[in-house]
Image (cartoon, rainbow, N blue to C red; front, top):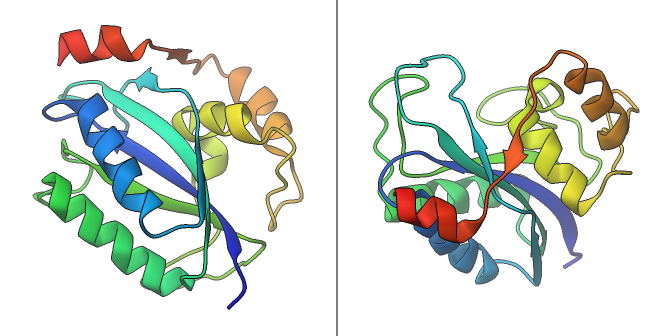
Length: 170
């Protein structure tokens, strides 16, 4: 079976956020042939704001799982790390978003690709710059670098955090 290049967004704001993301990365390694991870970033919550800041990252994997198998694997990893779905945008031990699956474009339940809000999320675009600034969004034709430039004009900037500093705060 052919390998597919996939980009995943990772986020955590409950418990040991860095540890949660690192645990998810190890579980994703078991389901992929290759894995590359961005730096970690501290970001403010979107939607429901009365919660702790997030630690976010993006990873690129090469996998033979189809998009729906990968979605199921991501949900299993979230649950294994302690995610409990209480309400929309609630604090969470782990969130894994399928951002892009090759050049596939699909819309519907349970999966829309590319992720419908990735182009307006600094916590997705900034880590993507670490991995692949020239990555082209298959629906819009814009590169990650171009989308980041447009978003950064809005002032919604984030900064990388050192893993040791984040771990001490957890």
